[in-house]
Length: 399
Ligand code: HEC
Ligand code: HEC
Ligand code: HEC
Ligand code: HEC
Ligand code: HEC
Ligand code: HEC
Ligand code: HEC
Image (cartoon, rainbow, N blue to C red; front, side, top):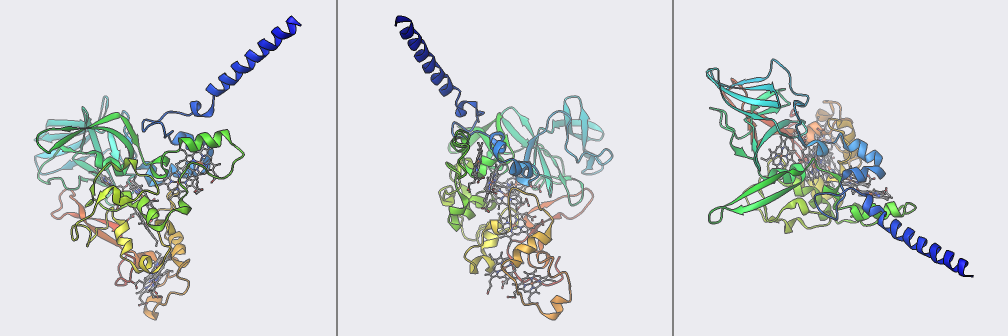
C-alpha cells in the first residue's frame, strides 16, 4: 500500500511540474518582444500566419518608406559617373564610397570641407529618396536627394541653392509618418523651446503591420493557442469601423503637414478619432487650399465622388498590402465599379482609351506648391508632380 501511495504522490508531483512548465512555455513567452511595449510583438510574428500579405507587403511603399543604410550598401541608385552635383564653378558635393560607408562630401575649389555618411533613407524611391546622417542622438538631412523623375541628384527640397547645407535637423515628426516608432526624449532648453533626442537603436523602420492595425500581441497569442478559431479576436476589424474612422486611419499620415500634432501619433490605432491627435487646422492655412503632397484626404473630400457617395474611402481604390503602382487599368476598374455608364461627349470619346484609363483625365498629375527641387545648372526650380485626389473634370489634354 505504502509503495502505491508513494508512486501516486510522485505522479501527482510530476503532473504539477508538467503543468507549471507548460504554463511557462505558453505562446506568449515564445513571441518576440517589441520596443513599443508589452502589447506589441512585431511584423515577424504577424507574417507567420498571414504569409501572403507578408509577401506582397514587402513590395509596398509603406514597408519601404524608411530604411537604415548599412555599410557600403547604398540602394540601387548609386551609379558611378553620375555621383557629383556642382553648385557653381567652385563648390560641389560628391557621393563617395569610403571605408566605413558612403558619404556626401563637400568640396570648395577642390578641397574637401565636409563629409557626412548616408545612415538612413526616407522614401521608397517612387518619386524621391532623401537621406539622413546621425550625429549623437540627432538626425540631420543630407544636402542632396535623389529624384526618380530625373534619375539624378538634386538639392534637397527647401534647401538653399547657393551652397551645400548639412545642418537641417530631421525631427520625430518625419518619422511619425515614415516609420513605425522611435524612442525620443524631449528636453526643455530655454523658456518654451524644446529639444529632442532620438534613440537610434530604438527605431522601427518602415510602416509595419501594427502601425496600421494597432498592437497585436494578444491577437497573436490567442490564435496561436486556438488554432481552430477562424474568426479574428483582439484586433480592430476594419469592416466594422465608421467611414470617418476609416478615413482617419489613413489620414493620420495623409492629411498634410499643416496640422499641428497635439501628441505623438505613433500611438494612433484604428478606431481612434484623429481630432484627438491634431489641433484644428486654421482655415486658409492648408485647410482651405490643400496641397497635393501628402494631403490626399482633404483633396478627396472636396470631390463629388466622395461627397455624393456614402461609402467611398481610400480603400475603395487602394489595398495597402499590394503594389499596383502605375497599373492604371486596375485603378480604372475601381472607377467603373461606381460609374458603369459615364456620359462622355463625342469629342472626349474620340481621345480613346476611355475604358482603360480614367485616371489621366480625371486625376491628372499636378505640381506640388510645397515641394520643388533644384537641379544642377538650371535657373528655375523643377516641379514635383503628384496625382490630384480632387477627382473632377479637367481640361482634356492634361496628362
Ligand atoms: C497564430 C496565427 C496568427 C498570428 C501570429 C497573427 N494573426 Fe492575425 N489573424 C489570424 C486569424 C486566424 C485571423 C482570422 C482569419 C482571417 O481573417 O485571416 C486573423 C485575422 C487578422 C486580421 C483581420 C481582422 C478582420 O478585419 O477581420 C487582421 C487585421 C490581423 N489578423 C492582423 C494581424 C497582425 C497585425 C498580426 C501581428 C501583430 C497578426 N494578425 C498575427 C491569425 C493570426
Ligand atoms: C504611418 C503613416 C501612414 C499611414 C497610417 C498610411 N500611410 Fe500611406 N503612405 C505613407 C507614406 C510615408 C507614404 C510614402 C511612401 C514612399 O513612397 O516612401 C505612403 C504612400 C501611400 C501610397 C502610395 C504608394 C502606393 O502604394 O501606391 C498610397 C496609395 C497610400 N499611402 C495609401 C494609404 C492608405 C489607403 C492608408 C490607410 C489604410 C494609408 N496609406 C495609411 C504613410 C502612411
Ligand atoms: C498602411 C496601413 C496598413 C499596413 C502597414 C498593413 N495593413 Fe493590413 N489592412 C489595412 C487595411 C486598411 C485593411 C482593411 C482592408 C479592407 O477592408 O478593405 C487591412 C486588412 C488586413 C487583413 C484582413 C483582410 C485581408 O486582406 O485579409 C489582414 C489579415 C491584415 N490586414 C494583415 C496585415 C499584416 C500581417 C500586415 C503586415 C505585414 C499589414 N496588414 C499591414 C492596412 C494596413
Ligand atoms: C504628415 C505626414 C508626413 C510627414 C510629417 C512627412 N512626410 Fe514625407 N511623405 C508623406 C506622404 C504621405 C508621402 C507620399 C505621397 C505624397 O507625397 O503625397 C511622402 C513622401 C515623401 C518622400 C518621397 C517618397 C517617394 O518614394 O516618392 C520623401 C523622400 C519624404 N516624404 C521625406 C520626408 C522627410 C525627410 C520628412 C521630414 C522633413 C517628411 N517626409 C515628413 C507623409 C509625410
Ligand atoms: C464609391 C463610388 C465611386 C467611385 C469608386 C468613384 N466615383 Fe466618381 N462619383 C461618384 C458619385 C456618387 C459621383 C457624383 C455623381 C453625381 O453628381 O450624380 C461621382 C462623380 C464623378 C465625376 C463628376 C465630377 C464632378 O465634379 O462633377 C467624375 C468625373 C468622376 N466621378 C470620376 C471618377 C473616377 C475617374 C473614378 C476613379 C478614379 C471615380 N469617379 C470613382 C462615385 C464614385
Ligand atoms: C477613386 C479612387 C481613389 C481613391 C478613393 C483614393 N485614391 Fe489614392 N490614388 C488613386 C490613383 C488612381 C492613384 C495613382 C496611382 C498610380 O499612379 O499608380 C493614386 C495615388 C495615390 C498616392 C500616391 C501619390 C501619387 O501622386 O502618386 C497616394 C499617397 C494615395 N493615392 C493615397 C490615397 C489616400 C490616403 C486616399 C484616401 C484619402 C486615397 N488615395 C483615395 C486613386 C484613388
Ligand atoms: C480623354 C479624357 C477622359 C477619359 C479617358 C475619361 N473621361 Fe470622364 N470625362 C471627361 C470629360 C472631358 C468629361 C466632361 C464631359 C465631356 O466633355 O465628355 C467627363 C465626364 C465624366 C463624368 C461625369 C459625367 C457623368 O457621366 O455623370 C464621369 C462620371 C466620368 N467622366 C467618369 C469617367 C470614367 C469612370 C472613366 C474611365 C472609365 C472616364 N471618365 C474616362 C474626360 C475623360
